[in-house]
Image (cartoon, rainbow, N blue to C red; front, side, top):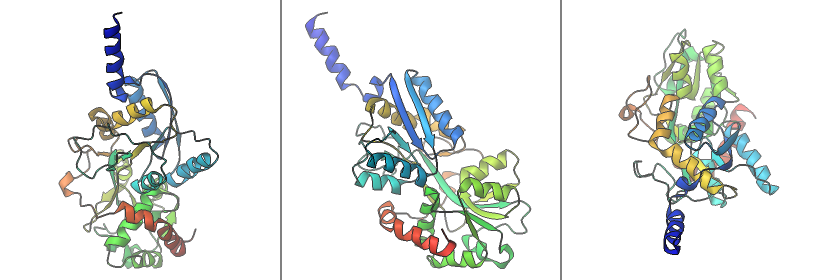
Amino acid sequence: MNIIIRLFLIAAFAAAPAALRAQEGKLVLYTSQPNQDAQQTIDAFKAKYPKVDVTFVRDGTPRIVAKLRAEMEAGAAQADLLLIADAVTMEDLKKEGRLLPFPEADVSAYAPGMHDKDKTWFATKLITTGIIYNTKAPTQPQSWTDLLKPEVKGQIVMPSPLASGAALIHAATLTSNLGEGWGYYEKLKANGAVATSGNGDVLKQVAGGEKLYGMVVDFMAIREKAKGAPVAFVFPKEGVSAIGEPVAILKSTKNPDAARAFVSFVLSKDGQELALKQGYVPAHPQVALPAGFPDRKDIKLMPFEPAKALADAKANTQKFSDIFGP
């Protein structure tokens, strides 16, 4: 081969986006996604990159991050990628220098502020937390304050911020936006509300009639309603909290090119269409919403500051524990 052509090809390969170069190797994903959704995401990625072998480990965000941190402390981190509930945890890892920036990531279609400005983590969905109720319930709540009424006493369940990243974001958001602050949660406790392990357990209890009302992430309730479960979901009039289920590449990854390819896929139109098929609100503003959701303009999001939530995370978990117990 002519030396000039050879040098040209080498230069062209080096300049090509990493996502286009990644065709083989292994990736390990640590995630808080439901098992089925995680596997579907991996299968769709592998359809485009069949020589990349992806495995995943799934748990709630606090537990999966605790596992990751223990491995990091031992100098034996196994994960290449992290796809979890909230940006607050990602901000913490970024602050520690644990995330690998991906400046070439194409986020041109997304609204400003959707992703980390330094491109170390990227929102993949818009997951809100609202109110679920059993259709046999005597009242249909439309406001967060409706959960404080005497007629719902002893019938409320919520996920614990000690087990759910989304629940921690939700607590931080509600206490920052409702005038009563943590007094709202104290009143919930006085009205017989209980905290359980996570959103899945909330759905199970309300759908089964063990409890009639709960706080839960939107897609779980709307998805199960479509399957025939006796539940309904409400976006309260004051607004809802939201998480972006961000994805990030760990700086310790052994296969950065394949990891970049995975992130690029999740952010692509195809990746966002998959999120839609799974019943989520895609982060991509040009992708439709699932059946059962209102228009984007009709979903009122409460203001949320990740940096403040990170600074307050320890105090917030302690406050929740003081009210509801560990």
